[in-house]
Length: 394
Image (cartoon, rainbow, N blue to C red; front, side, top):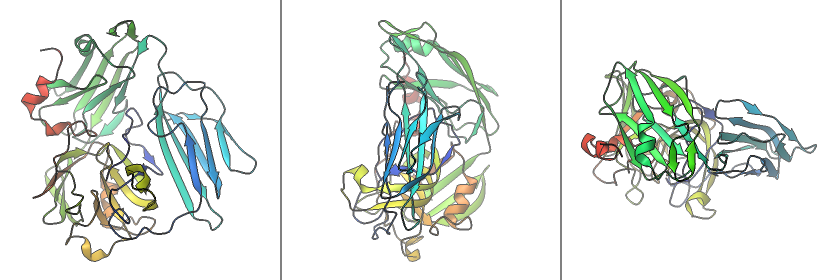
């Protein structure tokens, strides 16, 4: 499964209605014909993944072939931004200017004449003031996350003076751990310990970027502390050859679930991946991976994002139940049995209820490419020596 990259600095435990994504290959995400969906066609502005959006730029939602039911625009603290719905319920526009250097999420739900719903989600960030920069961070202040969650900063501008910026950022923990930084290019700086965080760890991100020159003529603006807590340990081990997922909490096996991974033509990534987003229902569209109109499934249930490029663990109601636990038939995702609309009692529903952002999915198998460490929150795929070598201050 491959899709557009995702933005950082949204509420860490947010549960949205939809995510535009795609699985490579023909048919639906698991190879079958795509089920019929709503005729309502949603469009949002700015688009998903937009950066440096002007604060006085247009934020709007429109629908063709249906009417809008709900629209929600919110900033990275979850505060809603008011908007106006048109009289015929086919359009919505935000009522006020946006804040500078802020991450926003836009979620819209519409239905067609037959009552079938469609939903769309977009995340975007607004521009920082001229000659300044900020770091959009994850996880969010006050959140509780799984043991695999790194601290990740995405900067609003390319950073040339990496050592100066790195010295102005610290991550400390209780109990104390050795925590090291690693740069992925000139816009992303992550921090992690040698191994997964111990359950119950209290972590603080200290941002002292105010007046730090990140690039010639560009000064930082942030001086704040961000606190989060590591919850219980939950690690799901996927064996693609055995077609199973073994879920352990605090080292104890909770359940072994049947799965269907990527087919030989579209193998699932191997390695340790971290849940970065949770969606009760998502949209998977082949257009996002350059495959035209092959499929558009608007109601994929119980989806957990693993990579920025579009790998998910998700529920599947359209494939033959016989494939789960027996064959790898997907286009890169890890599918579990589910019902249309999502069933809490299904394997996918059970996993969704037990999983939080920051939990780890470790995938092994006899075929497949290892996930890149900068694809999502896959930092753990670098050994400690290589991780430490990625810092700017030695």
